[in-house]
Image (cartoon, rainbow, N blue to C red; front, side, top):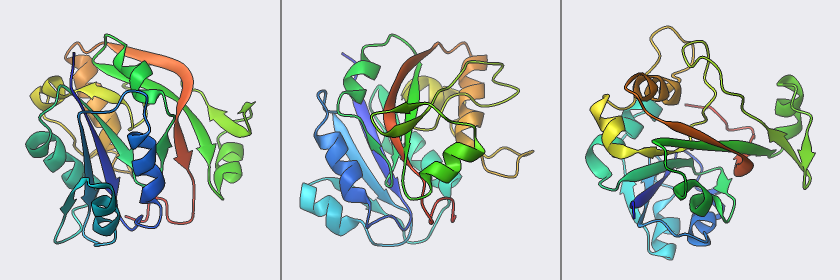
Length: 211
């Protein structure tokens, strides 16, 4: 049975992280390890300690790419890993459903939430509603022309390390570190399965993408 690590990454999201942590602790299939990472702010260790979860505190803000790269290459020892933003959370059966899939990358649809969720959905023409949430569906396409796999997907650690892990998109305005990783893994022959259910709750709020 493949082992799983869930990494909860935070930058100024200490006030939101408890929901992320509890969503992992309440999974129908618990991960083998949960790791909380505070990228240079110091507002999440108190929450991690309350749940008895290991916390890495950066002395300075590394930014998404360098932070994720260090975690993947130097801190994760499991077969699979899933990175979760501290402002988001997973559906209770997410890890169980994803871990059943025999693929190097397992992704899912997304439920949009947060005070800016409706604005985000309108801008992206997301109109389907399920259980009160706007549902962001992903359609497979040429990975070189655009990303169709979100950053909180479950993936093969050995293959990700083999292709060099995370890096910024040299041609993009945003770092797009997850897109760069998926492209390299798929080019190396990675298999991908997309679960057509919203397993990730993605919170749009005033502090999104501040660093």
